[in-house]
Length: 618
Image (cartoon, rainbow, N blue to C red; front, top):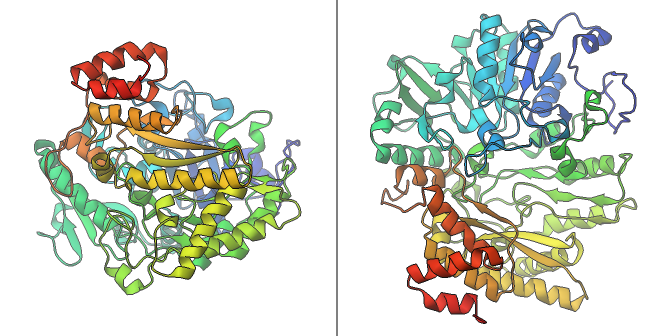
């Protein structure tokens, strides 16, 4: 049996606690074959937040023998790709928990000097586009073995997409990587379906209709026009010629990806057709529990003994309670990957994991996060699911919260109370982002509104680790509308609640707002006004970022095409490095080295009123 509890990594001895990563570990297990070998751009951390570990454990639970090759060396004689030989069913390939280009490069297209998913944060342990690099190597060595790709990179590059780092429109990753099938989104169900089909003797040609997968087809397979079950997108070649066509494509892609029952997407690319089968419906509580309740050690593999993996430090004492996000933020990829409908774990499953964290050797009594993609969406869904089945809105919160949304926070409070009642827990923090527009929205039900007000107070009073991070993202209502975020006025109201709770209970906590510069729709004067408004609220901003276009977001397509995908109207975006730096400098109005440039810029913008408000003492 595989042990359920946390384990000591002091010994080099490997037993059945971890999935094997070497020939020696496989021999120790006495296996005579391997069904699936997973190649990952990340270090192997056996934790339910790490995709490769999840897929490995799920396949293991279905009776398959699985091995993992983390961060194989693609520069040498390729021994890492040969060392475990040929799997019985397929190779799995993933770039890791991040798109490799986001992982490798900054918003200024500079190479990063570290990698949070690598031992000691070392850079250079994976190539650019590992999905392509790994699969090409494997197909060359083992041409007859199927390759299944998954993970963020393959998922978000499943159709023609803009690549900011190459400043070019790229084809579906399936046209560049010799993979046989892609599982997109959260891949447990699709991957098991593929394994079962191959085990039962089915050919790859028979796997063209598996839900939540991407496959290649012949042009003759594609419908001639969009119909009730299919959406025929503009071809890759058309999109290269017309940015407007590419923007129009994205609207269809996002709508179908966020439907409960989406349609099949087709895109001609050269002499092949990319077929994206519809997403599975959101996981049931039983299904998501089954995935999280597997015997994860919650630890990095012992091969990393004595080395620190930064990404693991962030999650080692955290618990993820649900998947999906219905916020629909224009710059975010969560719904494109996980879907907008929430799949929530049962309270029993969450409490089992919390108790497992409490049993870890290094646990000091503090749960770092009881969260999810958005911390306070746990257990939330439409009051009338029939309406959800037909819904095409990309966001349940924008332009205003859906009247069908049940925003009752009582289930979440119940879990917080149960976790805090455990004798081993001194305090549980909420480290994930909180949607205050969700908890502050008046539901029309006095009892629910009272519970939600209680949630805000308890969050601030009991679950803040000195600093509560929230994401208003901007101060301009016009920019916020493009971002699909609520008015800044709501942030002011939340800040008033935060200050009132702190004063009432004698707390000295900080509210830390996140902001983005250079987002589509944002002009330099909008950033100047952001500087003035945040100064007047006594914020010296720390959590800031320049907008980075990433595959498959509304904002990225607006940035690249110059059209808003939903209106197809022109939209401004800061494009050059100089334009971006001109916007970014306003975050740091309080830093003397930026003052002269900011004053000069505001004079150019003919806004002496803003100079006076930003620097009232001259």
